[in-house]
Image (cartoon, rainbow, N blue to C red; front, side, top):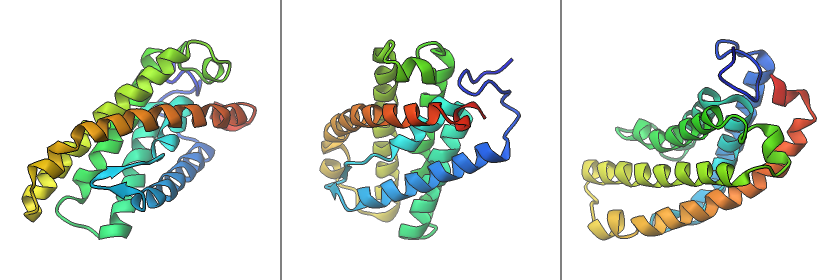
Amino acid sequence: MSNFPASGRSAHKFPAARLAVDALLIALYFALGYLAEHMEIAGVRISFVALPLVVGAVLYGPIDAALVGFLGELIAQMLAWGFSATTLLWCIPETVRGLLLGLGVVIFAKQMSVDAITKGKRLAVYFAICIVAAIATSLANTAVYYVDSKIYGYYNAALIFGVMWVRILTGVGTAVATGVVAIPLLSALKSSKLANL
């Protein structure tokens, strides 16, 4: 029996087409992350990088969504900064987001199926999961920011913790906006075979 209600397949099977969709989601993550790098103000990033994670989680569950988050952020980090002592740490927040979104899909299977979301059934659960994942991601980003600042010697309490609430509020706002944008995308994918891999 499947743990992934949207996919209808076991967690052990990753068909080539599904891996290709994951690769496209990783590329989309990178593109959205690149745009977000140019919209960062005082450590607060307005970003839609969660969009491919939401889609990956709803379509395929936590493993795919976590992979999209981890590999998307790893590529973004490598291309922007190269490999450093904290490169893998910066991948943790988006991996956590993907896992939480995917676990939300598994736990609330009926409310988080592609059909339920695209038909507007119980969207409160869908948005609540997006928001919880965003808050966890913001907190994880703050923790990684703190470790990075200590390692590289630029620690400033106001920079790291002073804007934490701004990061969280921005994260919640973008989680809602991302959730809204994901619905028509999921609707478009629903009619294709990609939602059933």
